[in-house]
Length: 162
Image (cartoon, rainbow, N blue to C red; front, side, top):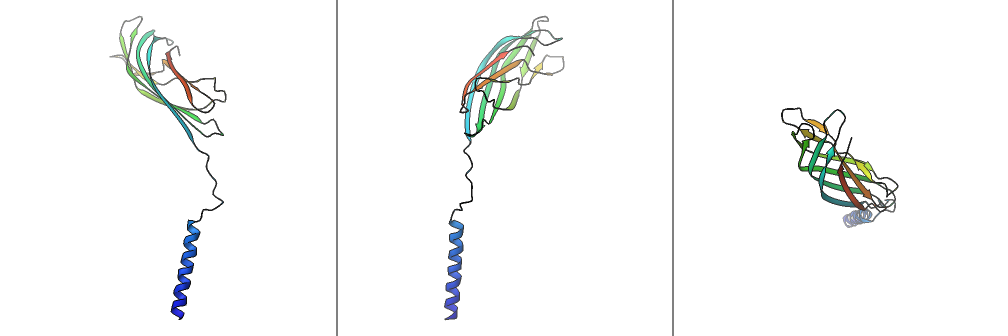
């Protein structure tokens, strides 16, 4: 009889232990849901870039921009902008030489509290002129507007001075 009582007690303790593992605890706090918005555009580039002590360069090409916002309903969150160039070239306005612009860039910024204000990023790319050193450059401005809930309302890119 002692054997039956011992086995029954063991089974009872095992059952209580299993029930304790399967019961959710009231102390676990729910994490706020992350809200993600994504938008990708390929934009045409056409304009003249002027940097100090360098010849103006007329640039034509395309830029692919992907903007991703990540936040919670209680906080504004962050904006991550990935930019890459595609078939982008330039012609020196003084020398007439052909430049190539290549590369990709990723930038992360905190979202502004005012959704009307765009987040402006100057991605860094490489400027290649055959026979000269390859130089990093930032001839392009990317502007991303984000509305109050974190949705991306617009993305634009233009060529402008440094």
